[in-house]
Image 1 (cartoon, one colour):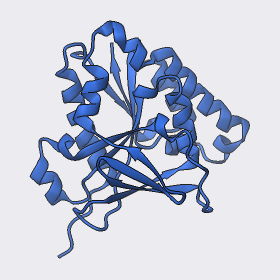
Image 2 (cartoon, helix red, strand yellow):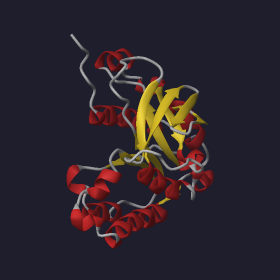
Image 3 (tube, rainbow, N blue to C red):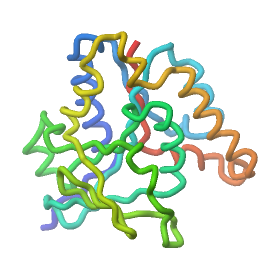
Image 4 (cartoon, rainbow, N blue to C red):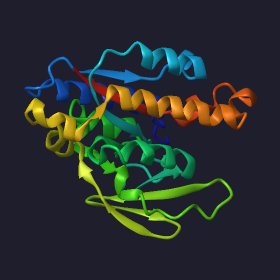
Length: 230
């Protein structure tokens, strides 16, 4: 009998919950909370309302990616990223290079999740999005790239480039386990995050994309979360 496929949402909820617990265990981050997108917040007005009501704080941004289901439980794992989303994330990362990451969990079966639970971060990896600023546009009609992860390296195709992967726990500790006075050097301010989201909304509005599909912005933010530390 083939293994059950693990949905992207299942991975996102379980791993982000574990990340939140890890972040709260750090001395300066006890009051941290996770901001994720819900279905009724994926349209233009929902994003606007969401970010307008978030208390002031510093943000760590993660773009969650789920691996392809085949082959199961085997390195390398394979993922997909796309040019438009990557370009939007790079705009955010250029302000704070150490605050915006792709997150690649090495789980595509429930058996592997069960084996590692409650320490899913042991086999979850971060890629700093700022390190992809020289990624060439995709050559396919979908505007997508394949990401092949074999820690400590990820290879991005079709024009292959190699970038560093970091274990999630190690990377998060490197960014967050610091004195509060250094957080501003690493994390995204509340105001800059709002400006980035507003730009995303207005860019699509100007192109009349949002009028054609009110959830298009939410799709570009699918799997996007921030961890707010205040």
